[in-house]
Image 1 (cartoon, rainbow, N blue to C red):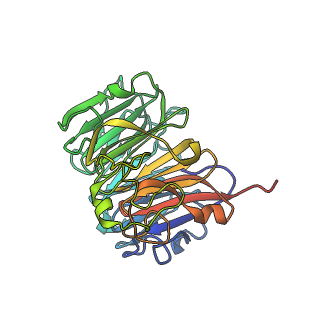
Image 2 (cartoon, rainbow, N blue to C red; image 1 turned 90 degrees about the vertical axis):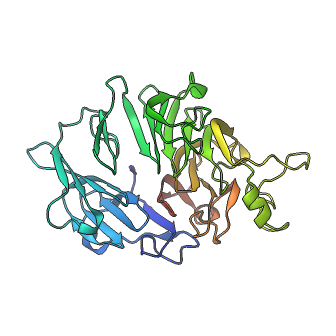
Image 3 (cartoon, rainbow, N blue to C red; image 1 turned 180 degrees about the vertical axis):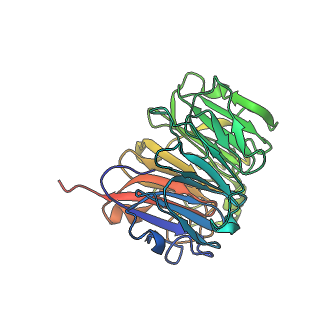
Length: 364
């Protein structure tokens, strides 16, 4: 979600189904879908692999990409390949949660619908977390999953095989598949129920995000903790795949060295990391403090307190925003927003693309 003075959304990355504008190599302003032109600014963008759901501040919803469709009176929407979940506002009635097959294009009847009790103040999270923070939506049956009463969720995010929950007290819980270390418990074992990350106990987290098979969270002091699969450098840790593909003299700039970070400070070869099962502390370039984070299937993006965007990981479709298709295992600042005097407020990653909300920097 993006609040505050009006701004603009930008998209970059996979464009095969038309989710993001432009060539896909660099950021381009996101055009409001035609059905929503009279509904005000875009408020929420949720991208799956083959389509994107856009919600306006006026409650309009439009789908673009491999499917198209539109609806009105929507408070939120969450896109996945298996399920499109829509939170509908109903004047005089409790809000209704609807689950649709994406290919239905919002026509006919939803797969299921359920009335929800009005959310208490301060407890309405973004989908897939339901208002009231006592349940979440899964793209697979039973669809609606209850949370234990003691888990007061602030955020909840779903990866390809795991779930990550940020509690109201700043503690982080994870569960689901763990074969790539994405749960952060130090093993590759699955966890059937939410389990607190003991490695982060005593630290207060304010943001969390789940990628395909990796996870990230941000502390109240702006530190970045990251763990899971590092196949494409999405953990910003040295990966053999990039070191073998990148020739000396290529890459570099704003935090990435010539070999994608595959060496230590004294020039010795770095230890390549395929899986990081414990949270690792990541230092952003220039001592930047992170305030927002999002993960794609195999890439990661964070917004700093200064309003800059850093990205790293898999970049084949331009989802890193650096005007190329290179992958990186070091954070790199996206220069487009700096060069155009744009302050980044929010970021949301689809599997193979990235969407960013910006406002113009105030002139001193």
